[in-house]
Amino acid sequence: MTELRRTALITGSGRNIGRATALALAAKGHNVVVNGSRNKDACDAVAAEAAKLGVKTLVAMGDVGDARTCGDIAGAALDEFGTVDILVNNAAIRPESPFLDMSEEEWNRVLAVDMSAAFWLSRACLPGMIDKGWGRIVNVAGMNAIHGYKGRAHVSVAKHAAWGLTKALAKEFGARGISTNIVSPGPIAGDHPDDPDMAAHIAAQESKIPLGRLGLPEEVAATISLLTSDDGAFINGQLIQVNGGTQT
Image (tube, rainbow, N blue to C red; front, side, top):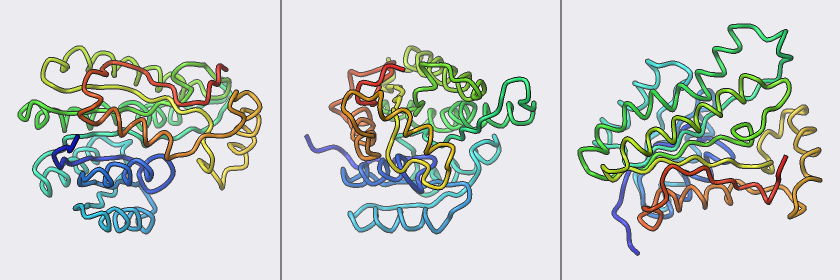
């Protein structure tokens, strides 16, 4: 099935799952808006790679943990393309702190990036989707949406909340031709190459994966690509686990 060219905004798309998703959607002929908070060179590189696939691109830098900045990011996309048809809320932070040592500032920061950003950006993009009678929202959760993890109470709460938001939007806007789903990746290769704590965590998880290996960003992107396609139109309000069978 040949799909119409649409515009996709993918947060945190300078590397890993976000990068793979931007390129997967570009390969299907969609224009892509690449977002990152710090590394503009990486975002520019993703946009350049996507442009080679014959689509239009835009780099919209900004910290999605701030409501006004989310408005600016969505505004830049809307100014450039007129609409955002596909929104992938991928950007996230995953700090680790014992619960009793966790500062209120850290708590609020994690909830802003990992949960509220999806609220702010969905609010900005939904009116255009409603006008067109077509839209796709995909939130990216990780296993924190299913399992609670010690030292990451804030992340677990934020990702559980993103799952709740997903179900609510799916029911409220499904009749408008807009689907909302959430993807929960398991341990993914190369996700945090410069973070020794995360690397140790991933190594510990690898032995629990029935497939016996880490996932690839492209495998998560393939699921997101399906959910944002015409072929995935009847998938709505679902949490899709892409984790090789990992249970804990």
